[in-house]
Every structure is written in structure tokens, then in C-alpha cells.
Image (cartoon, rainbow, N blue to C red; front, side, top):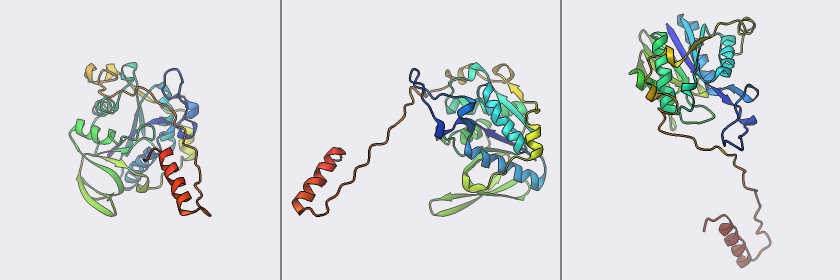
Length: 263
């Protein structure tokens, strides 16, 4: 079987900085990591490859520095990796990003299963996986907590709906987005770590893909992030009414509610 995994380089939330001039996140390799849920998408593909055989191709879209997460994927076991990169792709929202990734996937060939992390920690939209599926015209299931390949041409997928588990039979080809509960991501192997710095990363630019220029980058993005700013948590204050009379306690409570602008 042929598996493809979409991953993303994101800013580590513990090292997040905002450029005071542009109001945008500062992105560099020093504060960047692979999106955590993408590790579980990779593990899903690796586990199925181990079980039924096949290859795992990994792609990411971003600036040249995003190649770092592709090398991490190689260390974990990826067979082929591709970087979708071009200034024309800059400023893309989820719609333009998913369109570009879908065109890159079409360029690379046909795949039985495409995995994505359910969402990224820098935007939390959970839209990329379903939008890729819609663009490619194939089925998808989001937020998988369990998968098994029991019948040829179909994948059994479990996802949690409230307090219940929904079990679906998904006809392939299809897209599945992974949650943290889906599996435990493997560690890089020694062989993989030695291979990661020697791997050939394929580059795909706008000129390489059959894209409509009006649907990529900022031109193809109906939503725009105007500014990102840090939020300082409000200072916590304890309200003590112990030893107060009923009237005094009521006055303290009323004052606190007014301060919080609840009333």
C-alpha cells in the first residue's frame, strides 16, 4: 500500500514570540518543532506499513527551513520526503494550503491512505485534512482514536463522539486525521538518525504543480491573520468572606462581580 502523511513545522508554544513590529509569530528553527499530532499521523502510516507492507511518503508546505521536520520524519522511518515551497504560497490560509497540498499529492501520484494530524498547535482549525479530501474528491474521517486494516480496500476507523465510540468502515482511498489517543509515536532509530542528514528532499514549487495562481498564497486566501498578540492572564485574587457578616460578604461578592464585569 502507498501511504502519504502531511506534516507541518510549527512554533513551539513554550518558546513563542511575537514580532512587535509586524504582529506576527517569529518563526525560526530555534523555536520550531514538528506539530505534535503529526507524530501520531506518521505512526499510523508506519504501523500499517509494518503490517501490510508498502511505502510512506511525507510532505510539508513551508519555507526552506521546514525541511527540518522532513528530516525528523526520515529519522522515524519515512521512505520519501517532499517540501512544497515557493514565495507564491506565502500567506496561505487553510483553504489555499489544502488546495496546494492536494495538487502536490496529485503530482506525486495516487495513494491508498493519506494521514494528517487532526489540527496544528499554531492555528487549531482542524480543517486541512477534510479540505484535502474534498479537493481530491475522496472520503475522510477526522479525529481517529483507532484504526485497523481488516478487509482489502477498506479501513476500520474508530473515533470518539462525546462519551461514545463510533466505528466506521472507510473505503479507500481516503484521508484520516489523527488524535493523540490513536497511538504512541515511535522514537527515531539509529539508522534513521544517520540517514536524515543524507536524505534527498524533493522540492515542489508553484511551477511544478498544476495550480491556479488565484487559489494559492494570499490571493487564494479568503481569511487573513491581521495580528497575533500575547495574552497576559489576569492576576488571580482570592475572595475571603470568612468571619464576615452576611451583609459584608454580600458587598464583597458584589464588588468582585462588578470588577470582573459580570454584572
